[in-house]
Length: 210
Length: 95
Image (cartoon, rainbow over all chains, first blue to last red; front, top):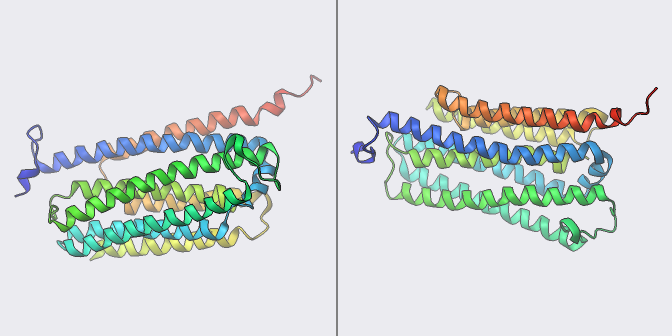
């Protein structure tokens, strides 16, 4: 049964799974550097505009941002439970866990959208469109441009993750995964956890350093 | 099911650490608030990577991929900081 998943160029299933994991970690490593470059940019501008950045961070929504941290941590937790459930041969439980995690992903996006809407109402737009009268300086403008770019890029990852989780839930529901073979679920889970890790670092720099 | 036990404990630890960061952000820690918040973030990230992403039991090949990323990231941060933080010194007038 498990052999149907084995490709011709691999000797056995464990070797194929290890190769798949290595491929995924290679991709995740490139994602770490992708976001890492933006965090470095933030740090470099922070050295220049530290005071303005602290001031600007007081105008992000601490409550919604913190709520979103709990939401993403919990979504990650549910996916970890889903992988454990498939390994324990409990696919229906895993399906519900994945759907719940995807729902939390949507909740995150809705809260983020509400935050963006509040900012737009105040005239906080990225780049040249910035017109927030309370903080007119260059520092705040750069802070919010980075805020939109980094949280926006992260939100794109959340959208991809939600689609992925729905597809994985469907595959789990159809009985595609077994305790021996569930590589797509495992790799999809790894992606979702990375999205969580990125937010764990976005949260303090944009909401807490006030 | 010892597997799910560690997952539950990690979730609780992550929520507690998040709550701690939230609470600490209201205290006047002056220059220490940023390092403290980032250190807690690193601890949370490590928990997710080690337990949820199963880096603890991972093969050397996967660990190597992550280690390369972290090493390159550290290099990037270090060199960028070295540039930005030494600009003021370079701009001092000669004695």
